[in-house]
Length: 122
Image (cartoon, rainbow, N blue to C red; front, top):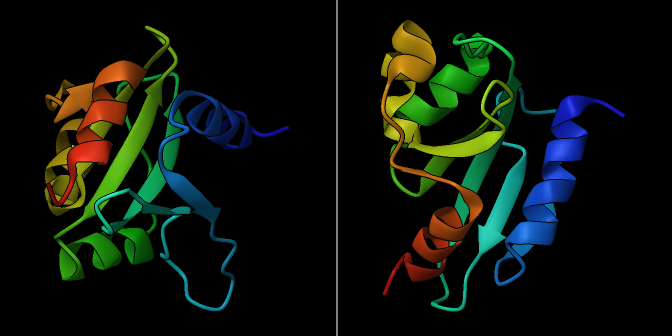
């Protein structure tokens, strides 16, 4: 099983209050991995990334998606060096590409990420 697939299993197990839909889309490159829906009626997308280093790799299509859709889009990175998920806003993707994990996340750790995503739209 690929690391991002295992990471998705962790997301589903740790953030159960969100309705998750895994998007497997080969027709539209750059489409994020997950569509989330919270109890406030807010849809949002999440791109999952797994890294063992400071660098996070994105395709040009993934970058373009987040540049074009800056609101309610997120990048959830599993930092294997400290075994911690980190959530970044999609609108910061270019800074994330340039600086990698040296860029401070919006939120980190499953409890705080869960709380943040549950409160979107409140």
